[in-house]
Length: 494
Image (cartoon, rainbow, N blue to C red; front, side, top):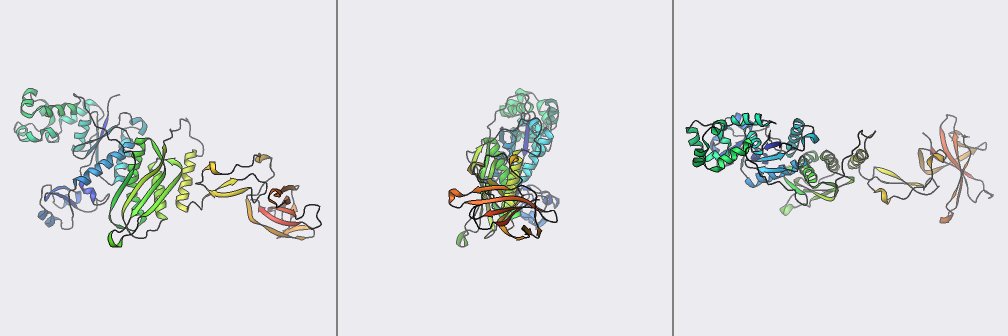
């Protein structure tokens, strides 16, 4: 299999420190040693250029956002991007000039081809809140140079060679110290550089230039240091302002979840519990962080599903104070389950789809509002079942009665919490209208082992409007007692 690389270049990485996805909204400029080193498109439209001093920028764009370059923060954003991209391939490496390289030779079929994969990578980059230029090539160095030049993609060696021949020599970092001499020779493109005599070029510029040129064209093997996911995941982001709206916090949480998805894919793990915390004021008016935990009934690793749960959890949470930072940690982990090998999808969705729906309902309504039936081995209807949270593991539920449901008499869909006493009219139980029996009696005798013996005869009854009810006749002292039995309504049929 021939290698195939995708290069993700982050040309405006220093600008991303303002806020996510802001580059199309307002002019912004980043300075390094009092000179412009990066700027957004709106700032360029106002006449700001690279190398301009601060005074000139303030004169041309007084409303521009100004910031000093922070190399440590840039490196952190680059590493976060590399961690997030591990969900597409385990072979990810960092390159100079804010670039991430991905060997996707074995990933194209899994993600539906180069175009589909690039679209997915673009979505991931956008969720991180950074802008990027994507290029592809059969060599890592060639894809890296194409990405720095612009959005250029090629999948074959010949097309890569043609495109590299037209690139400016300035993109070859090993030629930076010799640009004046090369331009004096009229050598401004890589194709012209390759036609120069190699012995003379090596004596004048050194072996490093030729080696880099050969690696770009595929004439020399490339060695890489792969990005390794840390043993534990814990990420944090400083918010640009005091934020009170949970929908904005959910947008920043998505950037952390993108990194989590890459980390889970690289470690082949799925998550059972998320720990989310919101930091508030510090100093004299310090407020304790808001701790949120999201427990999943089935381990998951899908970023979209996790983001939906976090968004619903934040929407139901109240903040004691505006948040200034957001953190995320993975607490309970399990080995990732292999994908289903079934040829046809299961009708109605897979069990995982069912569990994801339940988790979404729990996140939106609360664990106490979404319940599951837990049958008990007891014939008394009011005791034969109890309702518990859907998040309770099935192993902790009581064992159901080992009886075939098809052999039992009909049971109502709606069982009253407390049986409703019925009065008698003309020797018939009365509920709105006199009730007619439509089934033979079903005797239930139980509770003697608890000191509360119970004897009931259950009937299906019908009123004058053809509504069906589940009623019973209760014998207090047993059927042989002198006391008259009492009638109760216990359930309603649909």
